[in-house]
Every structure is written in structure tokens, then in C-alpha cells.
Length: 407
Ligand code: C2O
Image 1 (tube, helix red, strand yellow):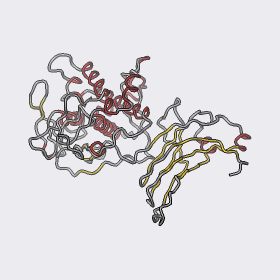
Image 2 (image 1 turned 60 degrees about the vertical axis):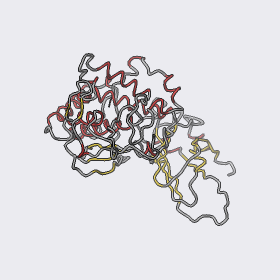
Image 3 (image 1 turned 90 degrees about the vertical axis):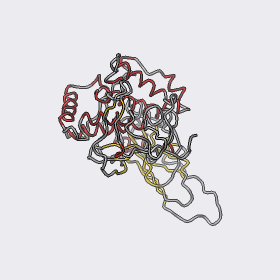
Image 4 (image 1 turned 45 degrees about the horizontal axis):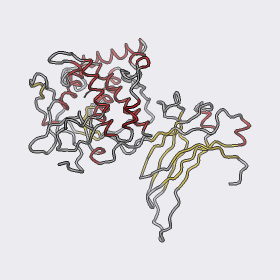
């Protein structure tokens, strides 16, 4: 029954109708006030925008807590029909989970549902993303980041490693099974992250009927705990991505082109997709040596090598390479410094099909490493940012080249 090439589309906002509280079976109203607004496509924030660093909720300082509370108070003080209003933001969760919409174009109608499948992670990522930016706007702080509730790590409690290992090669085990347009979410399509997340919802919410607050999708996002919870789910997804070396989890169009709708921090209705193909790749190559002396640096240059670069015949392509300092040996929030670019200008096909060798890019990085104060780091974060065209790369490494060696 699964139609291939059928990514789930965002709902038609004007078709919103009463939702149902799954527990009491009562009709509730969760429709957004912007049903007639024009929709634009989501554009990721510019790279030079200040980075928002999410911190664990148990480690926040007073100043941050005061700021965050002020933001929430401002959301609550907005007009009841303002899409940024606290209850309106909570209703977004209700509308997309409690049957306020149907999927576009199916008869009999298929309810829209963003839980229980691979849609769970990207939808909630956008949801927390816009919530964070709306609060930041209200208190005029472009660096405001949601705190995350670190339920996986309090004092040595860790997320079972096993879970990652088992599922690293089968993303659907972790992230959820495919869901294509026209399909009703089956009962067994959640990934392990969503399941763990459900346990936390249950544990936090009311334990008796009608299971209010965190325990019911209809009311859950009225509890600020929800956003701390989802900031952590989002962090888990990010950890999972680095365990997989940032290789895309799913390649199907049904995943890449599934889309959602949110009301953003600029009062614009935007259409968002799980993953843009221009997402940066981050790698952590080992350096051959650390803390070299001036003399050693004069004798051998530290070079970043991007090998096996492949561009389709004659096509235009470009990617930029940034180098950043790792944080505790891992990829941190730092976006680093520009080390160089790879550019392939469009050119004609070879007349005879000569097999072109793959390209290799070498960039000297001695002064860059000094600039980012990473001379003593064992590894460096290398960020490859696709800018144009289709390029694949074979690998990234750091080597030392003696200056007096013959080329
Ligand atoms: Cu939309 Cu934590 O659920």
C-alpha cells in the first residue's frame, strides 16, 4: 500500500477543525490564527548569526533563569490570538497531534500525525527552534537558547550506550520508520528515541485521568518542561548523527521532502523540510603532532587534505572548509575560521571519455590553528559547507609536509 515518492505534506491551514482530546474524547480547539497567511519556504539562519548554545537545565545561572522567565511571561502577556502567545504555541502541538487536520488530498481522510514515525524528530526540532527564537525576540536577546532537561546524564546516569550501537546502522530503529503521504501512523513505527521520550512524558505528567500536562499531547506543550524535554530529544538526535559520522539517515525523497508548517520569529508562516541538502558535514581528524615549536613549524607545514573530491562531469560546484577548535575532544558549538574553498567552474565534457582523476585539495593551516588557539588540540573540527552543485568527498585528514621535500 505504500506509495513511493509521496512525502507527507503540511496541512492546509484553513481546513483546520476541532481537535480531540484523546483521553476525554472531548472536542478541543487548537487551530492557529494564521490560517489565511501566505506561506514562504524556510531559510536557515545566516552562518554569521550568533550561535545559541543550549545548556543543561540543572546548570543554569540566576541571570539566565531570570531572562528565560521574563521571556515566558512576555509570551503569556501577548493577546490571546497572537500566534506567539504561550497558549497558541502550545496549541501548535495539539493541532498536529490530535486530529485537527487531515493530510492533503486523501479520501477517506487520513489524519495528520507527527508522532510515531520518522516525522517525529524533524517536526519537534522545528517546533523547539521557533519557540526559542520567539522567546529570544520577545526579550531582544538573539542568543537566547532553550535549556535542555538532561534526563540522560544527571550525575553519571547515562543513556545506555547499547541503544546507539544497535541502531547506528539502522536509523529507523532510532528515529522511527518511514511514513509516506496517505498512510495512517501504524502502531509500531516509533524509533527508540521517541519511545524513551514517551516514557519521560508519562513520568512527568499527571498519573491519573485525564492525564493532563505532560502526559497528554493535547496539553503537554503548556508545560515549559516540554521544551526542556524536547531540547534534550533534539540533542540526542545530534549525538546520534555524530556517532554516524553525519551521514544522512535516510535518502528517500519521502523523508527529504516531507514538510511542516510553523509560525516563525518574524511573524511569517514558513514551510520546513526534515533536512536541507546543503547541511554542513563535520569531521574530527586527528593531528599528526600537537604543540610544535616555531622551529618545527618552519621545517614542516601542517596541511589539511580533502581527498577524493568528485564532481559530476563539467558541473559547477563549490564547498567551503572551516576549521574550529573541539570542545572536550568533541564537535563543539564553534563554527571556526574559513580555511579555504573548493571551486569547480562549469566546463564542457571531454570529447574522449578520459577518466578524470578525483581532485584533492590541500590547505596549509599553521596560522589558522594558532588563530583559533588549538595548537595543543589532538584533533580539529573540520566543517565542510556545501555551497553549490553536487560534490562528494572521499575523506579528510591532516598531515605534515616537510618544506624541503621534493614535490
Ligand atoms: Cu510532540 Cu514530546 O511530543
